[in-house]
Length: 102
Image (cartoon, rainbow, N blue to C red):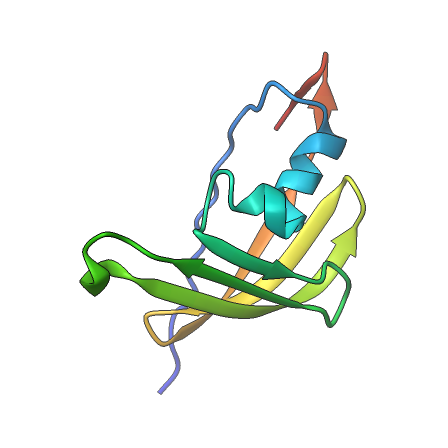
């Protein structure tokens, strides 16, 4: 049985230059400031990423393990992870204009 491929596309504007946004997406100490509770990140093709969420109510705790597929400094990154038993590719493409990044 084949599964239909679904895509979710989201665009946001961040009031920071793209090199800072790239760091926030790839450096463990920066990731934990806005996304997971703990993180491990080796941002290079074939490198691993691990994101861990810990909450007061432990029933909501979780983690994601993945692998970087593509890393272009300050421009693009893609990594895998599995969501609800479905292999997923997460991709960020960064564009900067007037000190803001989308």
